Structure formats: structure tokens, C-alpha cells
Image (cartoon, rainbow over all chains, first blue to last red):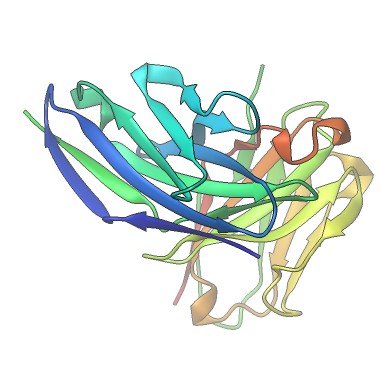
Length: 113
Length: 117
């Protein structure tokens, strides 16, 4: 069984400030981890993913995430927030032999000018 | 290249009526998934097609939901009869082929917002 916990359903940061969105997972098999973003009236877009190999993963739009097995975490960060980052972000997990994605409840990111 | 397309974008129906949602995956994608997000909750898996076959339907809530994928192309999800708790956003996703398995990127559509009154 797999599960994902996203701490904070709403996060607000000032433009130019660090963005940190938290994700913890539980998985009975080696996890594959994903961050998706949803902009208004659009589908979910993949930001980045971890499957194997390097634990620091870089994605689109300046985002990155680090897989920490000991902490069962996959937090999403961006050094400097931009107004265009305002959206809802979803962390998800799947694993070998289990293709369906298990999502967290999502975090809505607001950028303060 | 066209992305995953879902029709309609929004549907409002009364309890007891029937609704059919459609998903057109990215051309050539063997895998097609349906997910649902009830308001305020997480996005939950409903089922997974590989071509025209149901690979995993463990997330289907009950027998009022029927999914089909004729000829391995587009898919439909029918709810009959609809209940109030069926309201939510229904997402469709597709991914390429079997070899990548769970590593395959799933590409999502914009979703269909279903409101049952």
C-alpha cells in the first residue's frame, strides 16, 4: 500500500522568497515519486519525477526536489518565487508493479507581490 | 501534438440521471487512466486500461460506474444513475507503452467537473 501526506493545504510566500512544499510518503515497494502542478482551468502538468539514481531531481520552471529515503520525504523547492508559480501542487507516488498514482491532497501556493 | 482531451469540461445533472464522460488520450498511448477528485480531497485512482483491456479497476467505487475503451483509442466513463456523492472532477491520463511501467509519465487532461444536484 502507498500513501502521500502533503503538509499545508495552503502556502503563501512573497515574490522572490523561497518556496518549500512538503511531501512525505509511505510505500511498501521502492517508490517512484512525482510532483504535478495544476494551473487554473488546465490539466495536471508534470514538474519533476524521481525513479532511480540521483536523489536531487531538477524539474521545469526552476523547481527541484530531493528524495530522502531515511525521512520518507520528497519536498519541492524553488529558490525564488515568481507570480506565475501560483497554482495547486500535487505530490504523488507509484512503484514497481503498481502503475497507478497515489496523490496527496494538494497544496495551493499563493504568491504575495 | 494534441494532449489528453476530455469532454465535456463541465456537466450539471440531477440525481438519478445518466452522464457519460469522454477521454481522448495522446495518440499512440497504450495506457489510459481515470482518476477522480472529490472536493477538498485527494485525487483518487479509478481504473487503468492497457489498450482496450482493463488492467486494474480496483478504484471503481461501485457498479454504477462503467468504463469502456473501444478499439484501444478513446475511453468513456458512464455513471448511471448518478448520486450526489459522485460530484467532483474526473481526470483522464495517458502514458506511452508497457515497457516503462510505473516510470512512464502520465499526461493529464484538464478534467470534467461533474455536479450532481
